[in-house]
Length: 254
Ligand SMILES: Nc1ncnc2c1ncn2[C@@H]1O[C@H](COP(=O)(O)OP(=O)(O)OP(=O)(O)O)[C@@H](O)[C@H]1O
Image 1 (cartoon, protein in one colour):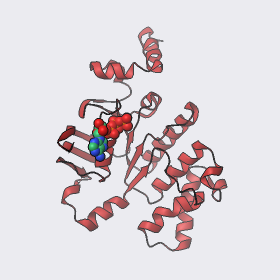
Image 2 (cartoon, helix red, strand yellow; image 1 turned 90 degrees about the horizontal axis):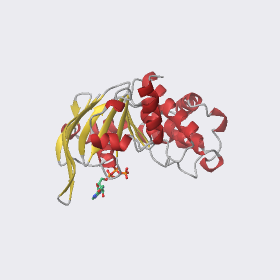
Image 3 (cartoon, rainbow, N blue to C red; image 1 turned 30 degrees about the vertical axis):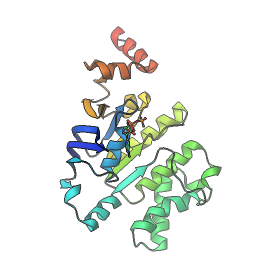
Image 4 (cartoon, protein in one colour; image 1 turned 60 degrees about the horizontal axis):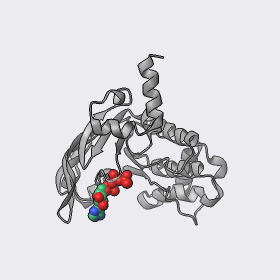
């Protein structure tokens, strides 16, 4: 569980995050949505400890980041997995070497222990057969699965994903969303996903927070997002044709 209390962030006097209070539960896929420039990436970076908030606190299972010493912060980072927008795989490393990277960085495991763990996670994302290939030799969807395998190889408590299905066709995007949700449940991870994708909202939006101009404008889930009374959220959501169609069907009671 991650608790965010009164989070503010300013850059050169300009306030980007303006007092966010929210909670992200364990075992749930938590989505951050909002228009371009709303502050989603800045928020995600605060959650990752990459940006220091100007005010407020972030607690990870009861421990506020700002109260941790360097060693404890390092320990917390070990418990964070990250799926980057473009995948951010190392081109010169094979799939298996990419996935092994965090184990080399953060653990003292022997080579055979590392190989064993890498095989387990590659098997989990159904990629054992491409372990010796390089990223350029596999599809975009497979690259995303490698990125997910790398993010979970160290058994993190927290998983952060920045636009995990950008650049993928809709069907592959849904497979990636479902994979992230399954892994979140299987390993009881607190997962936070930054997304623009309305398909993702419908598919895995168990907890959704909508940011507007650095403020939390609305919080809910995929089942109640249609009924929002927030005009900005309606405008955001119903700019998607998919949502318009789903609402029509709902209104007709089909
Ligand atoms: N390091 C920084 N220094 C100064 N301003 C920044 C910095 N990082 C972000 N900003 C500003 O914060 C605002 C919010 O940016 P952010 O990247 O969080 O938006 P976003 O909601 O993720 O948008 P998008 O969906 O387009 O990625 C923008 O106006 C951006 O210019």
